[in-house]
Each structure stands twice: as structure tokens, then as C-alpha cells.
Amino acid sequence: MGKISTKDAKDKMRHKPLYKDITETGHLKVGKRLKHDKTVEEDAEDDFVLDAASSRKVLKLAREQQEEIALEENRLEVSERPRFQMIAHESDESDDDAVYEAMSDDDENEYYDEEVEEVDEQDAKLFESYFKSENNAFGSFNLADKVMSKLQETQQQKAEQTEKPQDKVFLPPRVIEAYEKVGQSLHVWRHGKLPKLFKVLPSIKNWEDLIFVTNPEAWTPQVTYEATRLFVSNLTASKAERFVNLVLYPKVRQDIEESEEHKLNYHLYRSLKKSLYKPAAFFRGFLFPLIEDGCTTREAMIVGSILTKCSIPVQHSAVALSWLLQKDFNPATTVFIRILIEKKYALPYQTIDDLVFYFMRFRVITEETRSDIILDDDTEITEQRQIRDASPMPLVWHKAFLAFAQRYKNDITEDQRDFLMEVVRQRGHREIGPEIRRELRAGKERSTATGKEDKEDDIMSFF
Image (cartoon, rainbow, N blue to C red; front, side, top):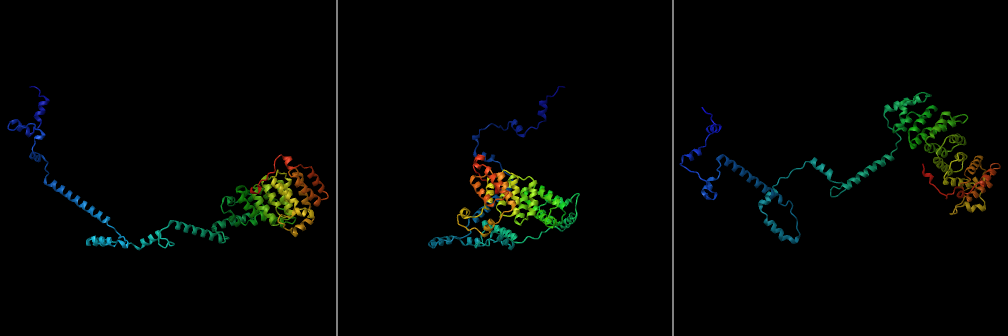
């Protein structure tokens, strides 16, 4: 028996379409016809025909689309309607009548029958608080007015805070209790380690309030020295000035006044030397208040010995010297002037001129020199000036004059030298006067000695 080919097997297994069987019998023949040979009736028969269920769905969708289109048209008509009727001029009465006649009763009913939403009272208040201004008569919102009113409120608050006295300090009770205990230990402290609460004071913002809780007036001198080291080294010059003026200054003056021999305690003396680590803090916090409050000669000698032993920058010394020269004559002030001159700094010309004018003020007034002393506006010389000129000068003044002539004889002009020679002739000391005159004569003029023009610097702006 032979093998059956795969092709014949496939033909036997395949289902044969019915129209092929019909065409093969010969009863009907299907030929190829052209497209244009079809009639209109055949084209209508060839169209696809839907069943009843599909047609119902199509009709339903079409109806829904029509309804949506109608709703959109109604919305457009409502939105295009004017919500407010504009009032025209009297000359347009005819146009208005035509407009009102054109409006139908149905349109008017539809317009007035619209629903009005009710606004809650809380919402209305919130709206008024945000968009209405009390200063505006029409109740409109103005951002500039609100900003200006806010700025005025802040300025008034700041003014009230500055006007109110701020003597009271509000500190937590636990902090006050802790630092009171620290103060009790500092009242008897001699050596050892300081409390940690005291060491952290320079890093605290309101250290002034806390330090007064410990009662610094009752500190031992050893504590004062350690505190000076701690605060002067860790604070800036302005803050260190506050410590020197509030703590160190009253303790030093009190110790000198209460001691039997008017001497300063050794630890407080070291505290003053340590405060010169910040020269600006020392001069503004201790020396200047000491001069203004009335310094005694004893206090000037004690503090002056510290200035003699310690090294001070020339800028700070020049500013302090210029400040001292502007004050009225006082033996204690002259002590500091002599000490700063004897340090032999290379002072600027402005400070040197101030020194010259300081010594020139003590000339005896005569008819020849009266025209030089009186100012351009012919101001009269006061009685105090006349009494001072007539009184003998103390020895410390002559020593300061001699120190100036020895150190700065080559830094003055010829006119200044002549005025100073006249002062020596009138106010000269029997032993110191000839030495001052000899030093002034040995000096050279400023321009030839330095080779530079006279130049003034604003040294008072250094602090």
C-alpha cells in the first residue's frame, strides 16, 4: 500500500465551502464583473444591514448627543445675557424704549427667577477683614495702606519699649539661685579652680546681668584678677570696656581710698596691667572716666606706673595723649601727659601740634601778647584763665615740658619754637628752665629735619 501525500490528506480533511459545491454542479456560474457594471439596486442590496438590537443602541446614542448639544446651547444663551442694565444718557431714550420692547416677558421671568446663593455671616466677616480698609471711605483694599499701618505699629512698639525703664532683669529663678551660690564661693576664694558656671560667663549674651548676681563688690582681689584675665582675653574691646568700667574701675578706686597708706592691692595692680591687653578698653573704660571723675595725684602715680611698665601701641597712646591735652589743667592729668611723652613714641604731627598749643596756653598775658591770644571775634579772656596764668606752675608741668623739648625738639616749626621760648622765659623753673631752653635751641626745623611737608592725620578717628 502506497503512502498518501500530505497534500491529499489536507484536502480531504479541509472543510469545503458551500458556494464551491454549488458552482461546480454547473447550475450557476460566477464570473468576474466590473465595478461599473453594477446597478443601483445591486448597490443598495450590497449595503450592510444592522439588526434590531444594534439599531436601538445607535438611536439611543444619537438621542443623548442631541440632548447634550441642546443643553450647551442653552448655557451659552444664559451666559451671553447682560447681568446689569447700563443707564444711558437722556438723549438715548428712544433706543432704550426699543430695547425694552424687544425684551419678551419670558426672558424677564427667566432673568428674575435665577437662584441667589445666601452668604454666611462668618464668610462675610472674613471677606471684609481681608478686602476692606478702615481708612478707606469706599471700603476697597489697598496694600500700601496696610504696609504703612504695619510699619507705624512696629515703630510705636519700639518707641514704647525704649521709653519704658528697663531696670528690672527677668532671669529664671534657678539661674539666680545657682549664681548666688557661685557668688558666695567667690567671696572667700583665694586659689584653686574657679566654678564652671563662672568660666562660661564671657560666652553668655547677658553676662552683665549674671555677673551682678554674684555681687562683684564682695569679690576677693584674687577673683578680680582671674575674672579680668577671663573677660579681657575672651571679649571684644567694646565688651571688655564694659567689664573694666563696671567691675574693675570701682574696685580699684575703692581699694586705694580704703587702704591706710593709699596703696593698691597687688592682685588689683596685676588686674590693671592685664586690662592693658586691650588698650582701647583700658583707656575708655578706666583712664578717661578716672580723669573726668576727678583723679587724685596718688591715683595718677599708681596708674601711671602701670603705663610706664607696659608696652602700648603708638596709635592708642597718640589718641589718649590728644584727649588729655584738650582737658583743663590738672596736676593729675599732667602726670599722664609726662608719662606718655617719656615713652618716646614717633607721634603724628597732629599730636605734636596739640602738645605745642598745650604749653603755649600758659604764657603770661601782656599788652604785647594780648592780640595774639584774643580770638578773631574779640572774645574776652575769662577770670579763670587770668588767675591760672598768674599762678606758679607745679613741678610736674616743668618735667613734662622738659620731656617734650628733649624728645620732639626736631619736630616743631620755627614759629612754634619761638612761642615755646617765650613760655620758658615767662614760666621757666630756676633749675629746669635752662635745660628746656638749651634743648629747644639745639633743635632743627621740622621741614629740614624730616625732609617732608607738614602733614596732619585724623588720629582721633582711631578709636
